[in-house]
Length: 390
Image (cartoon, one colour):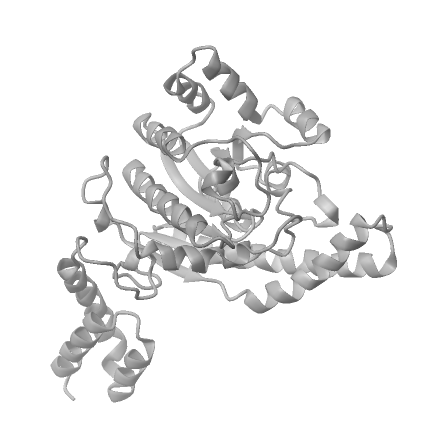
């Protein structure tokens, strides 16, 4: 096969099968000397052709990509790192199934946004970390520890210490995997996002963001403060994510928390003692509204605490529980969907730049795929508004 023939064959095949690595390697065997250069050009042209022929008004066709978009791993301007990890979940496990459930539900999302014109043109792709076995093995260990503590056992027992060290080491492996993936994406000039999994999952991404964009502020939407120190002995617990961010990542200049309504005294003292943290408790937001404050004015106050570069950490339990009944630790109160989206739009309209985001704690519900449907729509809006701000 001559060079032109190989080039054209690559284009035809990649247009029809944009994520088929077997076919790519088959073509490589035909002409190894010229394959690498040819395949790069062919793949770029195939992506362009597929984008042109993609019709956002057609029914979504499952293809392994979020929102059934025609972009495979490494091809998106926004790359979503799927992290199926829920080892330290303390109440109800299942969020490791969140990324897959959201991927499946995303096919049904209509690709229109009233603010962002041609939202369907955003190139969104997916990198999935292969953590299923590590997650399953360590979840068994974590459950033994949690049960031991709930039954009044001594946290210093030799077996518990050993098991806890195993879980903590595995959590560090996950953090490094996320960090490496995020850094690679960001070094290529693209935007990285994390889809959990429990809320400990995005620590590696936040670390990478803090290094690339020092001075970044975090908007943290959550029912919980997540400021526990090594909750239940797990250094990187889902309940400790923001404690670890404040203590370990100097590049994060501000943590602005919203919809928090379930926290302990130690966390409340930590909030009051830290100049980096501004927390808008759910009860204060609601009391202000009862007394005549508008959501617009409250959003302006929240946004005023954020610097120019913003990272959004969105735990779905920050919403009202009727929107996320399957989440690991649901709490009464919280935001409605449109309240949260209005706030994020106002961040964009203020001229601030969203430099990364995560969505966590979405769990397939026993009652159906409602949680995943809500999660898929949050994910799409986060992608839209991140694109707008950049």
